[in-house]
Image (cartoon, rainbow, N blue to C red; front, side):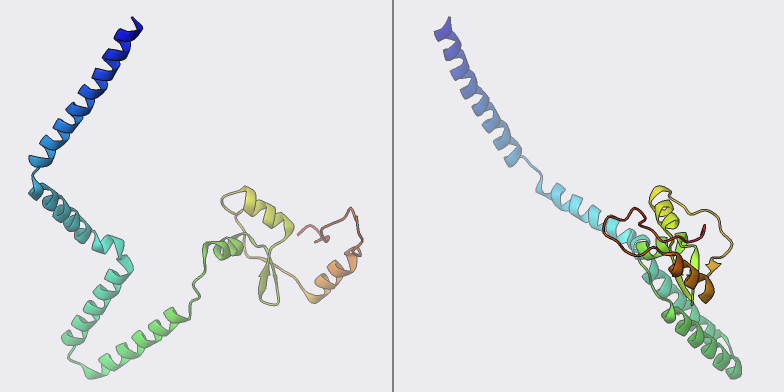
Length: 174
């Protein structure tokens, strides 16, 4: 029985290999090569139609420029054109002065609750809240620290000792 099993397995492997070879050769010779070209062209058409969706900022800038050119051609009054040009230049300057921030900086600005000398700071509680929750608590502005408040916080800070149990400064319930 053992010899018969080996014989069947040996011939089944050969039969499987020949059937795979015949099937692959059939598909290789009878394959429509135009179908591949058509698939590639259809993919290119889909990508071309999605250009404005993928490059929204570029498309909106181009459409804004075209609208601006149409307005200039439509206006007959030269004085108004000069005023509009000055306004457009001011708007472009304002847009360029904006600082682009990454997601970490945006998150820091959203969760920080203390401001001192025009700079924003994050308390330890704000930091923990930024890690735990997705959105900050609703706030009306930030807590403005004065020099006297900062001095008292620094005065209440324990000296740095090795193995100290107090790690954070006392921010007086910030």
